[in-house]
Image 1 (cartoon, rainbow, N blue to C red):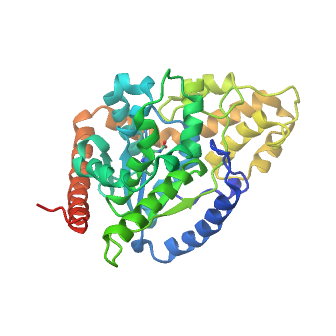
Image 2: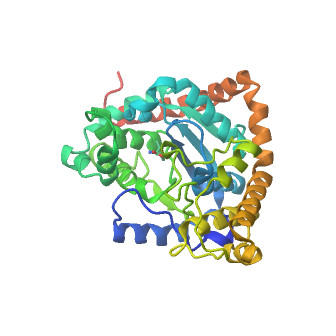
Length: 370
Ligand code: TRP
């Protein structure tokens, strides 16, 4: 799959967390440098990324992050992909059908082209040594630090739960274990994950200071921030499963057509690409442009006075054409649950081998190998 389409470079995804201006721009500058280094020598990087299994992924996820992972995999970067089935327990809404959500997520991974022969796809719950790292790591951060994590604060503010669980405050430290157990040095993230990556770096640094006797037992990973397009959902607000405005990767051609047909537009007939002034129309134009690897301005111009009807037909066709092979691959794997289980079993075995080795190093450094 090719690099991030040129069409989207100017559009940066809005952050869920309050923007940390300086930190973000520094991370962005460093990310450009990292991109150069990756192209030069992909073998020096190990990537870890992950998702909470909350159900089917949608086109916002795809063009926001998933596409980028497959790109890194194809560049030859060793890739670990975590199905964060313990982290997702911060959200009781999804706990009901967790194993179903896990399967859907793995299906989406295989559909987009993550290759289980090259990428290690694994789950929290099957890797005990990863989870054990949480314990010493928790001792390295203060309650005050956990309390000021802007992403966690934001999640608490938006949670529909009557109370806040202990996991909600501590999951960023668990995420540090996700990253450090395999000594990943590169974490492709959106802006909202930067505070978690900072905690990870802090944990690694403090662990090394306290127990390393001059050696870096745990490497400090870096964020790879990539420009991600902001795709709006069919109601004109950010595409999100919980808002019911998303087009799932797994949707079929008819469902896609139906969803796009009822998408919000505006009363101006002539189609233009103007994200600030005409967000709904522009998001549809952007979606077609992303699927066709074209500039959105060019797509808009082509439709011109065809109006919303022509725009929607065009977008539907572009989405269905681009996603047809992915959807076919998804359907293929969906028929073979045994294969799905095998992918996870093999990924979990690889993750366990690494986690066991890292835990042993950690315990040795701490003088607690008995
Ligand atoms: N917190 C991430 C999210 O909500 C998921 C995640 C879990 C993750 N562990 C990770 C992301 C480690 C990057 C690295 O999307």
